[in-house]
Amino acid sequence: MVDAAHGAAYQVAPKVFHELGAEVISIGCAPDGLNINHEVGATHPDALVRSVRANHADYGVALDGDADRLQMVDATGRLYNGDELLYLMAADRMGRDEHVPGVVGTLMTNMAVEVALKQRGVRLERAKVGDRYVLEELAKHRWILGGEGSGHLLALDKHTTGDGLVSALQVLQACVRSGSSLPQLLREVVLFPQVLLNVRLLPGQDWKNNPLLSAAIREVENELGESGRVLIRASGTEPLLRVMVEARDADQANRCAQKLADAAKAG
Image 1 (cartoon, rainbow, N blue to C red):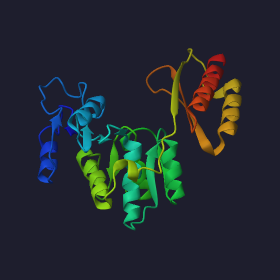
Image 2: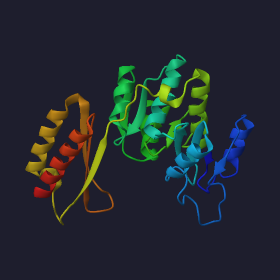
Image 3: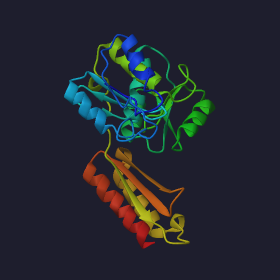
């Protein structure tokens, strides 16, 4: 299944997979000038999940309107985001004895990816959210692989910017080469539950010098240890403080995030 989001790749995406020998069923390939990304594509992957299940497809490939993002679906209808696909691309190269010194993610890259890469001796560097920052960090370290959960993936020996089709071919090539399915290739990566809460800031509120929040951060980080992380940052567009907690246990992540949000409000 190919979903081109009624966007830039509506003609080329189905043809690429057809030329490579796949039986292709397409959705999101009928742009009318107004329907780009409308309830289809990588930003609305539920449409692809339903279509993969309904058509008993082996794989689903979702691009976004400008075709630089990728989300994928397996035969069961399970969705795989950019974090998981980035790990798969790195693991595939290591499986072919390529040297992968490091990978660039973002502040939001799931900790499970960092843990899995570390177990294989690969460093994860975190850039600010946005593919331009990932690219800058890759250039700084002279590395090849980077990406973010939204599906912007970079393999700089294959292309110079995000290209969902090229990324999809990297993933599918790994599956074919190994004779393994997506779940098998990603068995080492079990995504940590990630809880994100927004706290509205009052005019002039200095959250960085809030002693209650500082104390709560220390307590939560001590509780999580190596099994989770805390990320707190101000929105760049709204008077909001974004509180994010990842932990292996969903209840713990929720409880810790709420504790931090309450401290931020109280300050």
